[in-house]
Amino acid sequence: MPRWFALFTTGLLFVFHSFCFGASPEPKFRSQTLDAKLEIGYGLAIGDVDGDKKPDILLADKRQFVWYENGDWTRHVMVDGLTERDNVCLAARDLDGDGKVEVAVGAQWNPGETTDVGKSGSVHYLLRPENPRDRWTPIRLPHEPTVHRMHWVKPLYRGVQLVVLPLHGRGNRNGEGVGVRVLAYEMPEDPTQEWKTTLLDDNMHLTHNFDVITHGSGRNAWDSLAVAGKEGVRLVGVPKDDAPQTLAIGLTGTRGAGEVRFGRLGAAGAWPTMYVTIEPMHGNEVVACIAQGS
Figure (tube, rainbow, N blue to C red):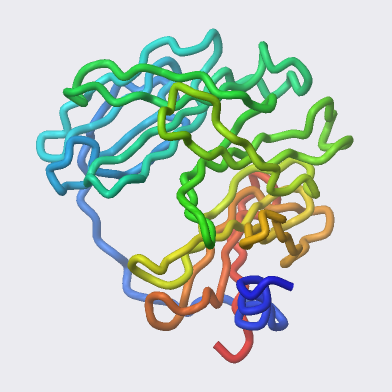
C-alpha cells in the first residue's frame, strides 16, 4: 500500500458516526447583488484572474463563461456560445506561480445522452489573452459524455492535473452499466498539443460531485479526492507509480450522496477528520460524519 494511502487510512478511517452540531450564534451577512441577469449559473470558482492579488469570481452561465473583477465586480465575458448546449462547470487555479489562474471549462450539458461524445459533454482549456478582459481562446480536449464537474488537483509526486467527473458511465441508464470514468489531464508545455489522460477510477455509478482534499501546506502540499455518488463516498489518490488507489468510505446504501466536503477540526494542514454530505442525491439532508477520537 502506498505511503500516502496508508497514512490517510490510518489518520482518517476510524469508525465514523453521524455527528450533530450544537446551536451557535446566528451569523450576520450583508447581501450584494453582482449580476441580476444570470440565466442559470451552473458553476462557480474563485481565483485571481488579472494578477492584482485580489480574488475574483468566475462563473459558468448558460451560454457564457464570465468573470467578475474584484472591486466594482465588472463582468467580463471569457467565452460565448462555446457549444450547442449549456455550459456546466469550470475550474480555476494558478498552475505556474505567476499569480494568475489558469482556467478550464466544461459544456455541452446533455445528461440524457450517455454514449455520443459529439452530443454530450465537452472539456476545453482556455488560453489567456494578453488582457484578461478580452475574449479567451478555447482549446478542445478529449472527454467522456455527461461531463459534470472539474477541479485542478495537485497529486503527490507530480504537477497539477485537471480532473474531470462525468455524471454517468458510457451507455449507462438510470445509474446502471459501466462505471463512471474519472479522468486526469496533464497539460503539456504547449497547451495546444495533445494532453495525456489517466484513468483515476471507474468503480462508481451516477457520480455527482467531488471535493479536493489538501494534505500538508506550502510547497509540500498535495491533493487527493473524495467523490460522491450513488454508492456513497470514495477516496481517490495517485501515488508515485501512476497506479491510482481508491477506497470506499461512508457507504450510504441506496441513499447515495450528491455532494461531499472534507474538513478538519484541528490545526490547518492536519489530516482531515470529518466529512459532510448532501443525502440522498439532490436531497434535503446534511449529514456530518466525524472520526472518533478527533
